[in-house]
Length: 89
Image (cartoon, rainbow, N blue to C red; front, side, top):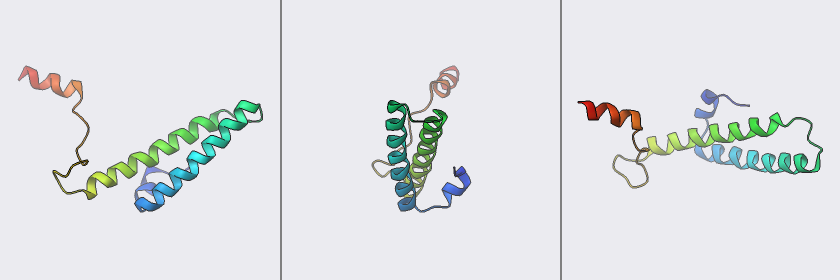
């Protein structure tokens, strides 16, 4: 399992390759689980979280590399808590 710091040092191509490998691993774990061969179901959750970590770092890099105002580079909508604070002002 790689830390976020280690993942941020990787190139986007390497991140995509690692995510693809882990997706294959997740498929294999799911198959083992359905046949009753899987020793630890915790491996499923660990793999899912590692994939999410990798995809999050890849998206961060994508947003950082895109010029401001470029289509597809917009950041997610503000949180409701952020909007509630502005309504009080």
